[in-house]
Image 1: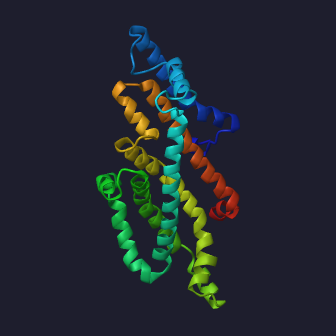
Image 2 (image 1 turned 135 degrees about the vertical axis):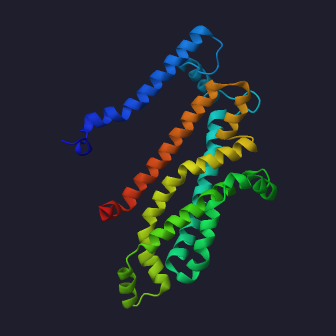
Image 3 (image 1 turned 90 degrees about the vertical axis):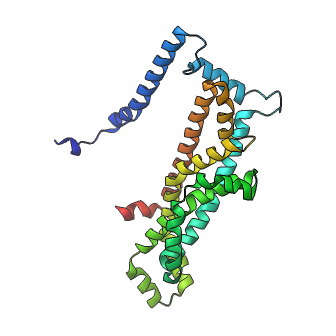
Length: 271
């Protein structure tokens, strides 16, 4: 049998999934043990015990200055900003995408505008956002919205253009007007794609959030990472990076599960 036609069974698949992570952990802790054996004060590759102590200090002990448990406060702050940004971007992207992809009069001006906006590096306009919206929560949420809305809208626009013309003609034959077409034909076809677009943009949303928090914030996961970097506190930075990765994976998994539960026909339709 050719290699391209071979599929792993369930146990083999689990082994192959875990293998790269096990190799990475082995390589890291081997390097950490080697460096710490030569220099116990080395901070570049902290041991598991050092990282556990840092997590225990930040996640289960109150900060002496503020009285807050910093790990959970940072997580709540970042997730609130991220949730607001994703929610607003999803709504705007859906509306703009449907308008550009389904209504030719709107598509003519919107389609090139969205193409241009999607090419602007969001981090390049971050200073402008801080000047216009200040250093508070609004500028961080706006950065996420500006960063991912054009991409979501262009994806939705493309999917709207791919809806079979026959469906729209049949609905109009039955007396559907523009609003009925959008609400009863176009929108149900695009909602599952919106969730997939959000999954694809999660990485970018986290990037914009961390960048905004690192530059101007008093709490948040990005703020904490860039605050402790001056002390070379890798025992704090690495657990925070792992935590951000886990949160991103959980969000991705939640959106994937929502797509399957809310739109079970979508996967079958693609097949």
